[in-house]
Length: 313
Image (cartoon, rainbow, N blue to C red; front, top):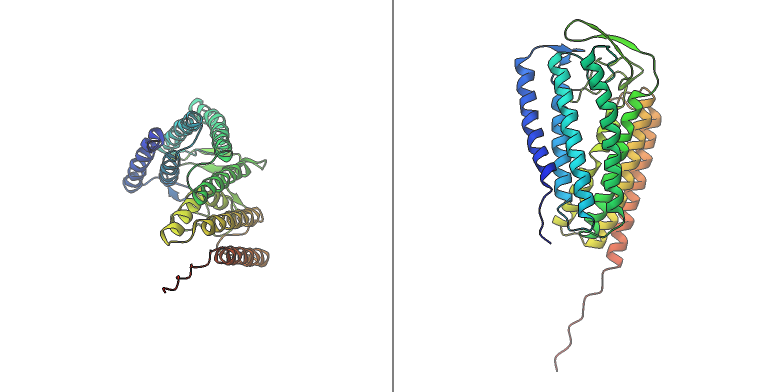
């Protein structure tokens, strides 16, 4: 079967890459701020993240597999939703107002929020369908196959964590870039208001918990798993060992995601882990190291003995 990348997601990756460049230029030319950050910081991060994600989807759908009509159609739906989502984020940035959690009563904002409320669950379900279709068939090498499966489910966990940002909480009044007061229902910070001191580029809070951290880590588990499988292959690690190491890494990554969710919900900055978080990370590191050691040990033990030369008479 011809190996061709999925075109809609590949084109989306190109569009998102160009969009990221455009947002970077806009951030330089447009000095307006939203909660002390450039209006174009959010669309820049979204376009960059989705460029990587859609390029990964395009590549993995090039792997020969059954049900291509299902996977191709589902990925096309995902690409369309991501394009619309980023378009709305850029629209709100151009208007100088908040994209998410915005409860303003103007007609355009109501349309944006209603569209988000429809598109985001649809994209989540489309990713679940894609993961399920690829879970019950053989495609590619075993290590790549399990990297794709594990990475897709990690990405789904990352997407699901986004719903924690819109959970029930007290509305907060903020001022947008036009000077208008906006009531925000929801937010990504825990224990502190959104828009406080944050890390460079990512903007993750350095004073309280931030649910964007596990959201980002989970979303990009797909790339991490695939790169791990390809990297181990490039190093010449045996296929059965690579497969075990990928499985260990996926479980360890899921554990890291769980630790980061707990840390954020506790209102703890990612830059200043508490004692419980350090203990959890240390325990996770020991378990992953032991699993990796066991995978390598079994791989060595399973290696067939070298054939002895037959003596010449």
